[in-house]
Image (cartoon, rainbow, N blue to C red):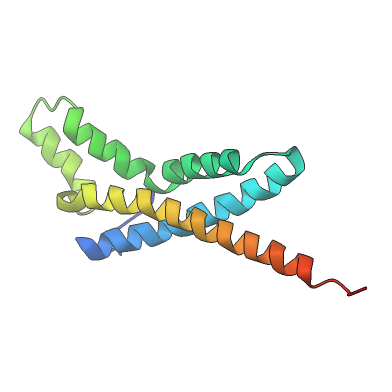
Length: 130
């Protein structure tokens, strides 16, 4: 996440918090793309795909970049490694946090899709009877 994470918990608690933030981001992005897609004639797969892609980039992009860097980056010195680790919140559980962010975006999109579908079904049946 591209913001200060010092207030977040460590370990599983931090992962759940990151996942919850990602779920909110995924739900908001799906609602946005649903509104755009309704006018543009998009199918559900396109709305979900764009929502998931942007949700992962927005909510988990910094953590994914750190995880990629620590696994594949060339660390020339121990001092560079210490400096890079100092900028990461809870580096021991970075993989767990990234996993929770990926799952959280999907859960948020799913819940938003269910809520929008429920609202549409409820709105159709609420008309005047003939």
